[in-house]
Image (cartoon, rainbow, N blue to C red):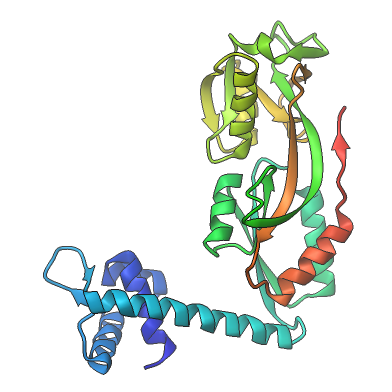
Length: 298
């Protein structure tokens, strides 16, 4: 038995299909079937009930899956620790980024880090803050950017940007000439928000409820530039971080929200009580040195 037998078994169990597991692993279906048969022969048990339309683990299969996952995790940790011993001559960092943020400064810091450690590679995955937190807990990401507050029992974090949210309207909107607006004044407005994968959605809807009304959401999107186009087309108005509103190419007006003022606080998070590769720890130190908690209130 080698580690590949266990990895293939884990993938077949995950997808409940030899074909789908083979596609995911970029091997042929006969190859993975042969691996599983060899594993069953070596262990002297059947791992799957093959009589049904969908593969189902046997009792022995469930026991072995639990142990296989433990072994696979230990093997991955061993590889990570060996990377450490190589003194950052290689490494890979998986970072979750919300597409809502202005990432220019963040990408610049990645570039600076790459100049210091050219052999470390990055995988940048765009998702809403909720999905980023979930992926870190499931070990699909090493670190990520989210909106505070986060689950402090689960994550370490450091905050690096705090700014106000602004009402964003087309120039023809009755509020376009205002410098500030009370949130309650938006009760009858049609709102365009980021979708529910984004913590910002909860932040805005929660603030509206505190102001005494249920927001009327006409549309949701995961892309700030698409939201800008909808505002310009007079489909509705939005509430966006000031820095994001500044990225919109369309002609828009931004208005300060008062009573209550709404803010968002961006932070980099990573999982507590979990091994971090030396590359990831070095990147966190490097990034934290170059980011400071600030406030944008224009």
